[in-house]
Image (cartoon, rainbow, N blue to C red; front, side):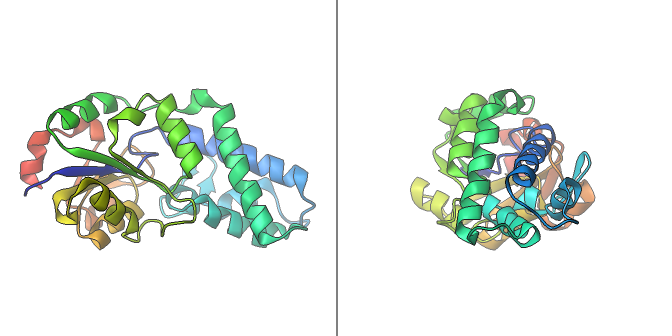
Length: 240
């Protein structure tokens, strides 16, 4: 297959997911509960469970693993019934997530071996891109903090102005930016949503086990499942 581009999910694929996003979500929930008068039965645990956080485990099909912040905010809006408009609450939640990420730069870490793989792929002449459910601000900040920002020819995020994964819009934007066709692209991700995104766009999906999903969850939707992007070499392109 004539592969000319590689598109990556961000968190759980290139960057460490669990420590960062569980901590950030817990902090945001704490602020929301203090800021808004809420129904008596609403607790931090219930808000976290609603987005797929169960203690130190994240459901790979839950909102935190696969959806943009707007979807998380809408779920919490229905639970908290805050005394403000839906639009204002969404803006507040997005701002809290972005602020919390920037206040905790130590939580932002690239997964082991990732930078070396990106360098190798760039040296092979491949176009590299990001397709994430995260916001623009948090995406650019986290990639810069991790020292990975300059490796990418395209960075696609979910700020409400483009249909998020698994819709194919971010793949189409990557292809248009880099002069590619989707069949020339490999999509790496750690969730079932990432794998369906690649399929929906007509690209090849490869699952990694560094995020929230198991091999059994990813395998039915992926051409291949590997332990980490760090284990990927250009030679594996011949097996896809």
